[in-house]
Image (tube, rainbow, N blue to C red; front, side, top):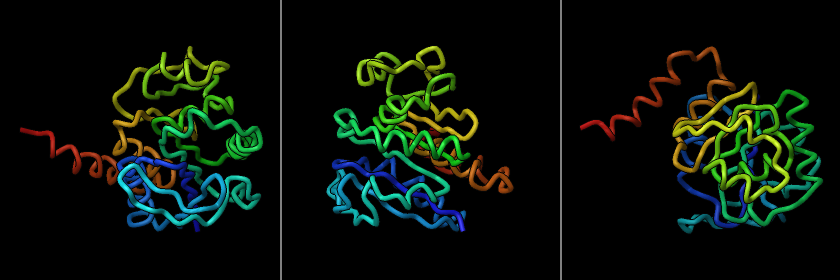
Length: 191
């Protein structure tokens, strides 16, 4: 069974976690687990309290197949070399890494964006939040999620394409179903 861990900081963004977690669990049979910095429940921006299965430092997280860094303003102040090392090792092991909104700051600090096409909430914004970020040459100014290998990044305004990009990596055999998922949400914006 595929296991995805959602890394939730205090003030995690409901609209970023919802589409990807629901699509993975409901449509792709992925087991969803939650990790928080200290293993305690964390409240979203919208007031949803999410229970935690793990803390960020739990070694078992290295066994997950998908690691999802869900946006939160708390990522901006988060500096933990052990966590960044976990991300680097997971990526080196061929795991899927998804970072959306301020979760891209953690990916930048871990060095995952160097030499990779990626996006975020803005190239200048990302460089300000992660001063040692060496990946600016690969920054793509995109309204949609960007995939490079097994790395998916998105701005906080692209939760549906982020979700579909992660699902494509988890279940490539689903083919056009991923495009249908995006099209289903896009109907809201058609006049």
